[in-house]
Image 1 (tube, rainbow, N blue to C red):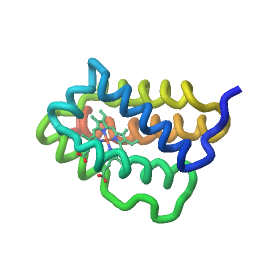
Image 2: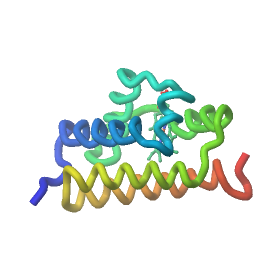
Image 3: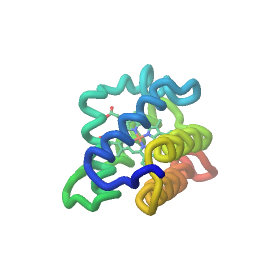
Image 4: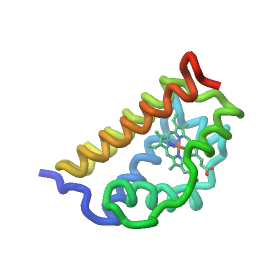
Length: 128
Ligand code: HEM
């Protein structure tokens, strides 16, 4: 039986594994590596905080405007519904590889729910 997500180290392990998969992914890896040229030393700690806030409820862990960041990215390179779907697939696979339990389920649901909310903003009849 795998442990559930409980500590900041757990969140860090999950996010590290997820972005390892993202960077190596044949469908969406290039968006991070070549289009956005992500500075991982900066981005990973931001993502630890974002997920700590969502999963562990650490107050004020993350301050930022993720929609704005993705709007900027989208303006340079169209984000497709299938990109979001692949993102969610990799996120779920990362959770399942390391954890199980209610928090693990919550993490997968939140990733899915946010991606589903964002998807039509970027790819759909009313997308800009
Ligand atoms: C196709 C799907 C996605 C792509 C290609 C993508 C790509 C990116 C990139 C390139 C950045 C900017 C990194 C930088 O600072 O240079 C970023 C930031 C971020 N992304 Fe995504 N993303 C995707 C989906 C998501 C989803 C579904 C979530 C949430 C569940 C998410 C959460 C965030 C957050 C919180 C940031 C940090 C914003 C900040 O700096 O405050 N992303 N993403």
